[in-house]
View 1 (tube, rainbow, N blue to C red):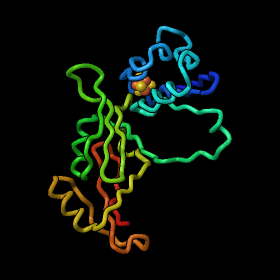
View 2 (cartoon, helix red, strand yellow):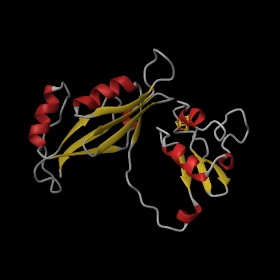
View 3 (tube, rainbow, N blue to C red):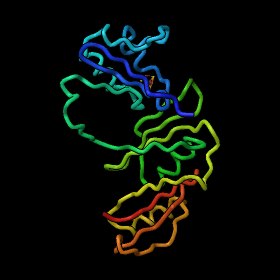
View 4 (cartoon, rainbow, N blue to C red):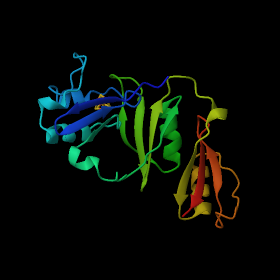
Length: 198
Ligand code: SF4
């Protein structure tokens, strides 16, 4: 069951924490220990540093679990700079291997302790980004109702390259919204990746 968003208000800045997204690497705890302290019930106390220091530390949260809002920004229309899907998967290394076959590279990973497999990874390919997180519960392929659309310049060339990387690719189809074709691949957890053109 999803945990509720935590909101911590302080003069000059409000910090929110989403426990469902945190990867528990401890960047915040090490970076600004006076503000982020798990030994307290109210574990985020932004009033113990300047709003600028808190905002900078929140910006270093690798998972996006932490966010902040400054009063001067509250009345403005939010400007979304990027939207990155996060897929919950059975095995992060296995999914990294699959998406590397689609041309993605690993930007960052989190391993819970020395010698363990990563439980979270951030991947990118040109302007595309994807996060992978280890699922707490079994992943059921038939229930993956989200499609990922991957855009490329040449569908035929991409299909050939993916096939060479050992990925099972579907036939190229030509619906009216993709006159130069599109095809589907399915990742190890059943997420469908549609490969189409810009
Ligand atoms: S920096 Fe972000 S991901 Fe890391 S422990 Fe803090 S809240 Fe969690």
